[in-house]
Image (cartoon, rainbow, N blue to C red; front, side, top):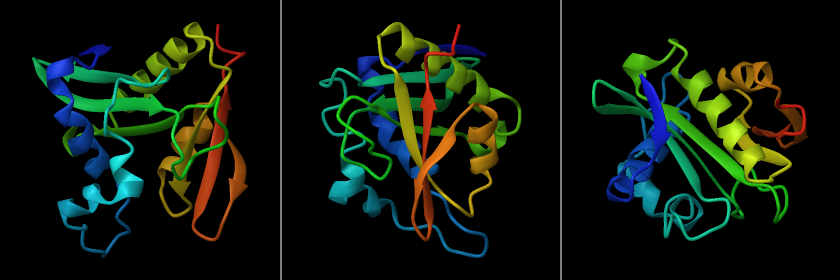
Length: 159
């Protein structure tokens, strides 16, 4: 497996992985893919590459992209301020639990620090088991509402 930057001809993958990143509680039906056209979700991929924090890394195995992590500064669910990129991540179901997500996360945290960012944020539903994954990577809860945590990861302690 290799971690590399998203190529310009692969930008469609952002939409695919955004759909994979949607948390579906057990017993619930997944939403129709048309949900990705809603403005609050479209901002995760529309004109990606135009912003200073637009960065996407993918995991590739045997020539196939199996996961993606990306950041941009946007007024999304995990928005903290205009200097902190928000993060989204998804790994293909059959590759979960094998360290792919962790490798993607460490790679993007390193890259963000190299680019001079001091923190990165994300939003995660409280019922999502990924909360523990993010905490294991040093994310802490900054704010919460009834359903979600806004988590932040400071980057100064990354060597």
